[in-house]
Image 1: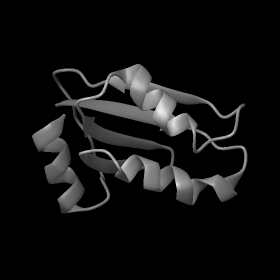
Image 2: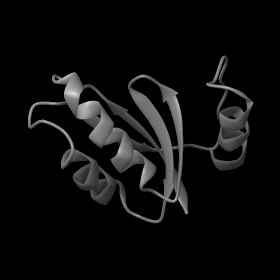
Image 3: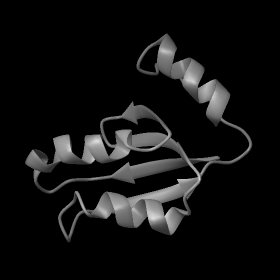
Image 4: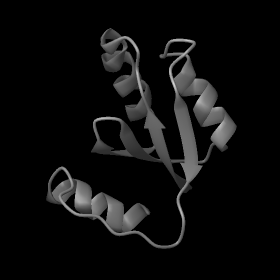
Length: 89
């Protein structure tokens, strides 16, 4: 299982509920900001990209990066998410 950082923008905000459901379909997930999430999965980055792109418009930017070995953050969306990040990043 690896952790990816997913960064996106949506030209049509109405697509956000479907994209959030797609992000939640992975083995683990944690929202970081309005436009970035961390997810845990056994899939390759290209597979993650393609799965999420199905919920997005053709011109919407999407980036999927494998997380590194070190991380730091401030003001996560609560203790639950902070603990998820400590465990999975």
